[in-house]
Image: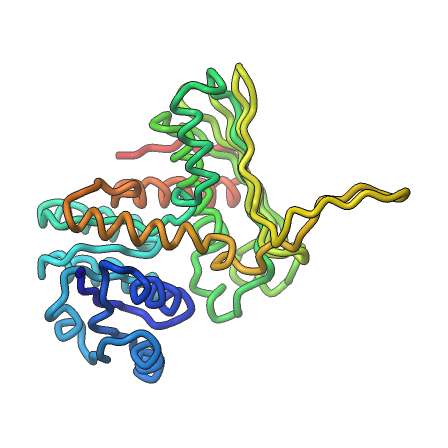
Length: 332
């Protein structure tokens, strides 16, 4: 059994706790949250004990799952690595690339297994598209189109510290694009955005509707579109075009019924309402891969460096949006 410490007992932490408790090779041992009643609720539902310090949380465990607020991630990763614990950390590593770069050497030197929780790489449909690209099924990759639309804005307090749509929401799509490009790194980013949902975002220089176009080293073009408002459910899709064909990864639906009548033909079931529902299986598979990695049976699909590069793309998009100019990307 892999004994887990969980940092963060909010919505994502609760989901991870449930998955740990349900896994045959895992056990939730320690739970820490600055709001102890939240940690207590997780423990009551999924086991373990509430701890009141980082040091106590790291005692008696094999691995940590970091689902706390973004500004805590780097410090918790460094402390966990120093204690010799395997690390599964939610995205992003941090909003400050200097902090990400500063921790890179210490984490690499620690030798502990580290995996970043970019869950979209673990979605079965996305993985199937990636594997087909790598196998050469559609020939030379020429275009990647990613659509991500959420069902609504997060609370104001979250938006204020989120780092903006490109670092908070679209960072998932930057990582997914890199996954599909399979080593063909993005060289140039151009971003535009608008406020179409809530004018509150203008107070923070943020937008709720965004599009990005990127060009890879080999010339593949990538288009990403994001919206904070999707009244019909959480909408996340991928389309890739190659010299020999096209692949699509659609979202799952509640059913696959097809209805025909004199007025219309429809094949519709409801979309998942939240990203947790949409990527439920991806989160399970992500955790399982991490557990197998801790046991020495697998290598991570998403590394610390992948997380760093996704942030670099998010930073480039943010700079492009502000300057209204394309931005060249350096990975140094």
